[in-house]
Length: 352
Image (cartoon, rainbow, N blue to C red; front, side, top):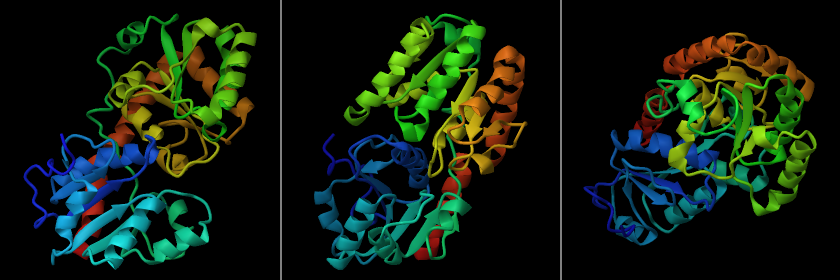
């Protein structure tokens, strides 16, 4: 389907929201954008600009934006990255009637370029109080939500694991691009210590290995080989978006090992799928996880702490099952996608 043709039932004259996704790689920002955009499209006349458009929202190309130039109706341009803010500012300077919104997940001091761009936004959304504290201007805090139907527990977790053909009866996983920031090395080291003592478990890393990280990934594979755990350690590489929920359903325990994050969407994806959660204190972990109830928190980069937190759950998987059930209930209560979409819609309505 050609980008400019797929405005579906939306014309340039009555469009209200443009959702840009101007990033080459699929990332956590892309994932959060893809989940909430179709919900917003049910409340506003919205179109997606860029790659990885999800079902449920119309599509528009840059040539299609030309039709909006003479529009007198206020339009929302909702950026989530610097390059998207730059394009929004430029389009408005050239005469497009955009109200600019930016969602920030970063928990760090911003560059002068980002600060300059943020000052030109009409509204700012932060994904946590921590992210908001770095913005130097008023922001609306809206926590991410997750599609609890798509990321649902399996009817039979044992059967879901069995279909992989992996050894053992349970899986423990760590998702995200293979790199130090995600703590993949922390997970691998913890598994090299624990797997020899718990033969019912297989470890799974689901995530892309970029060209830049080939050396890092190679070192991890050598560590696994040295521990003679090749048959019980799967590194999938990048998998199709549609297959990710099923991988969560195959896990009994999920390890969130990031050293730093903006939010960490995999936290609530794993919880929604009913996985027991052991999480480093990064991103939104301390907001999302109720210590000892829906998960266990550990210091980032601390292999010893990760091993100590995982071992009781591996020793008694029934404890992991019970924790996963509580985690699912927590997500249903506080981290639904509808709650996120409704909060974003309130920001939009204040502008248009």
